[in-house]
Image (cartoon, rainbow, N blue to C red; front, side):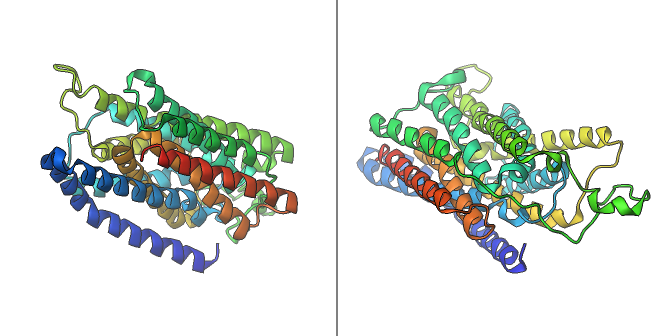
Length: 389
């Protein structure tokens, strides 16, 4: 990756994270004040919460759509080491958020959501290497949308069914977002293997024939035919999307049962960001377990690429900030509104990166399909937003 883009992403991430950290205590105070002001200021309070919610959505989609850019042209091998570095950065973000929030009560069940997400995350590198950054995000986003939106809208898995002021617009918006992902599937991508001067990964025994060093960093993904890559990448993206869609269910379940007198979650916080540290701890713990299993399977010779450490950490920080903003969007807008927006619009941003910077999409036909899908995404996101107004 060109140094300019890496410095740009790092600087953007730093500024956004500092801003987010600075305004978070103020936002909490405003929420508490709005509850005390009573019905006379209900209109102003509602307007303020909508503003917070849509700003959170904007930051979230920007970072979700860009968080894999720092590692797009960095060789990450089979991705297991990369996902562990990324999850370490994610947990670091949650630790900072936990300190800012003054250590709210830790609910272990929220860790289950993190474990589910981390299970889906181990498929990310194979997905990006087979079908590309833009298409991969778009496919898993569609199934993330379907699972997350439907479970919140209809009250699956013991969580509260969410309502909106204009349900017809909400249904149409979610449907258009899902349709856009189906349209994106017909975009053919040209994914090139990243060129790197680092011929062999760290911790790989290369004392054997030196002539084979150039291929020691091949992963199973690199051995697939073009058709097999498309099928495998698309299938993994579907699995990842389903798992991502379930990752918020434990938190929503805890919140829904907080009012049960004498129940195990009685008195649990209704502020979604209070569960970030628990969920992100589940992410880091699960990713560590997977990485240790992987090391054992590889007989303590894992593919560990030093050049992937800093970009991977930057990617994880961006993802962590995006998810914190998603928690805020869930609180201020409700998941039935935030899910269609945050799960699909990042795909549009990722596709722009893929087209403009990485040249993954070529040809007039593909550009026309992309334009159609973009229009569907924007229309779906706008209808979903208007359903809350």
